Structures are given as structure tokens and as C-alpha cells.
Amino acid sequence: MNLNLEKINEFSVLTIHDERIDAHNSAELKEYILQMIEGGESHIIIQLEHVRFIDSSGLGALLFGHKHMVAKSGQFALANIQQQVLSMFELTRLTRVFEIYTDISEVITN
Image (cartoon, rainbow, N blue to C red; front, top):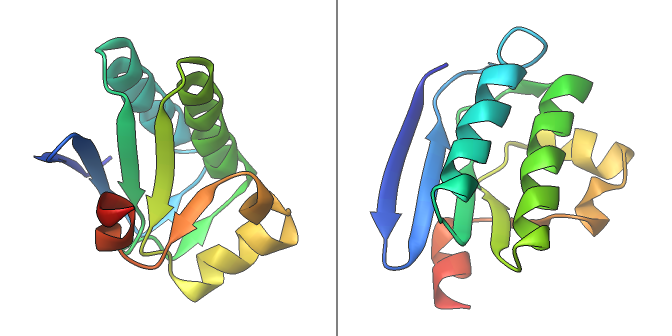
């Protein structure tokens, strides 16, 4: 999986450069997010601007990260979601679960 991690203030911004998050790479994403959380990260933003497709295993990997971050009283946000991917979050009603922002600047300034 093609991931890029950068720190902006107290936020760890993980940009996913793959066009798909599916059964082939979701386990790797899940493991990477778990390592971030176990490493002490408390504010994670996942940037999805390059992702054009997500399936149930990809949604599951993000839910896994969200669940573990909430258990540690941290923040887990999604940003820059393409419309076709956002429609999957809307269809599954996960827009009620995740903090979803148009741009990372909205998360950082909140």
C-alpha cells in the first residue's frame, strides 16, 4: 500500500495514495493504523483524496481504527473524500460514525 504519514501540529495525517481500498490491501491499512495508535498517536486524519473505490473490507479497516481511537479518547477523522467513496459511507450510514471533512484544514482549525 502506498501511504504517506506527516505531522501537522498535533495531528498525524495519513494520506492513502492507492486508488482502491479493498480486500487486497485493507489488512495492511488496518495494521498501519493500529501501529499508529499503539505508538501513541491521539489525533489521526486519514486523507482519501486519491481513493476512488472502497469495499466493505476497506470500510472495516477504517472502522477498526476509529473504534480503537475512540477507546483511547482520541480523534479519528477522514478528509478529502471523493464523491463515489463518500456515497459508500452514506449508503452504509457511516457518515453518522466518522468525522468527515472536506479538507484537512477544517480538522486542524476545529
